[in-house]
Every structure is written in C-alpha cells, then in structure tokens.
Image (tube, rainbow, N blue to C red; front, side, top):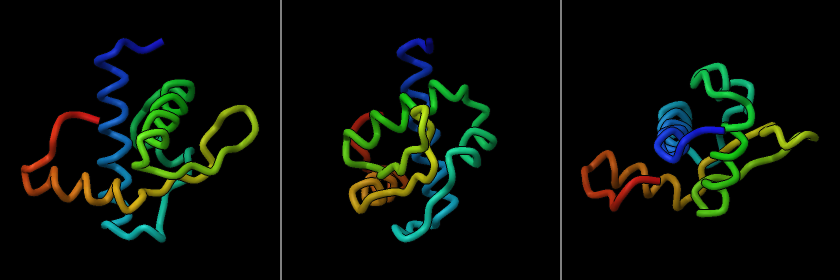
Amino acid sequence: MATLRERKTYRGQVLRVLYEAVEGNRLLGLTGAQLRRDLHVPEQDLAAACTYLAGEGLITVDWEPGNTPAMVTLTHEGIRRMEAEEEGTATGPA
C-alpha cells in the first residue's frame, strides 16, 4: 500500500492528467486503463485515488467489476480546482 505522500501524489496526478487530456471539458474523460498507462500507478492505488477524488466531488467514476475504474471524468468542481491551480490560487493539495 502506498504511503500518505504517494497517495497525495497519485491524486494530484490523476487530476492533472485528466484536466490536460480533456482540456476542461466535462463531457470528455479517460479510461482507467489510459490513466494507469499514463501514470504508471498500481491498479489498487489508482482505484484508491479515484475513490478519494470522487468522494471529494472532483471526479466521477464508472466502475468495472473488481473495483477498477472504467471511465473517469472531471466534475465542474474538479475543473474549477484545476483552473484555480493553473492560476496559482488553489487552496492545498488534493
């Protein structure tokens, strides 16, 4: 299992990769397989990061059997958070 620092890093990476890939469009998303491939994150840690971020209301996740993200998209709040980070006004890590 990942350390707290690694978990926070994975969460931030998921948000950044999604935001960059969808260019702020809530209608677009990435598959869990694409995220794992892009981030080189173990499947269990990706699932934990997605669960956390979904609980915070920053992403939505369609799950496959076995607790595997099938499709991950940013919510409106997730886009706002990433835009604030891009502008340098974000409040704390994910």
